[in-house]
Image (cartoon, rainbow, N blue to C red; front, side, top):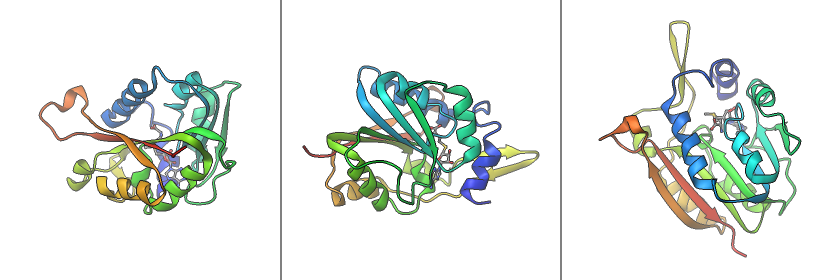
Length: 209
Ligand SMILES: C[S@@+](CC[C@H](N)C(=O)[O-])C[C@H]1O[C@@H](n2cnc3c(N)ncnc32)[C@H](O)[C@@H]1O
């Protein structure tokens, strides 16, 4: 099953399934942005709008992209706000975003499904204003080394969504190649992860002024 088909299927239960990674990511996003404010956020891979609901509270405008119409349909049901625009778009293609139009590009739990990071960082750089930030929160590569991937249950079958391993250095290198500076790197554990490897890694990159 390809990524798009998988998320079309998963959309029905993505919000209600037990999923510690999804829950931790929401908490990380809250903690990271609770006291910050933005003019314009571009969210790539918004899914069912779990974080769009937060981003819309801290920004004047949010453009939220996803290539799964079914995931976006769920997001539209949940997040009905005048300052949010949802659009169906494949982020491996050209983004429907003007150059220098966002002060934050946000990406939660998406890049494991994207083989090549470099074009993503290049487009994030283009969409950001000088001084704008690119936030990335992903399944920690330590987990990926253990074979963990996004997965869900359908009938009796566990369906794994196709994923690519990205090392921490791959993110840092993609940022360097695209002239973005790493401002912060953090590792995150869910409360149920005690004594386990970190579940998530987050990066805050900045486009130079
Ligand atoms: C694990 S979900 C995360 C959704 C949301 N960001 C969250 O944190 O709950 C991954 C999302 O990435 C989207 N996605 C994966 N590859 C994509 C691509 N090439 N273009 C746009 N969206 C993509 C999927 O459709 C799915 O909604």
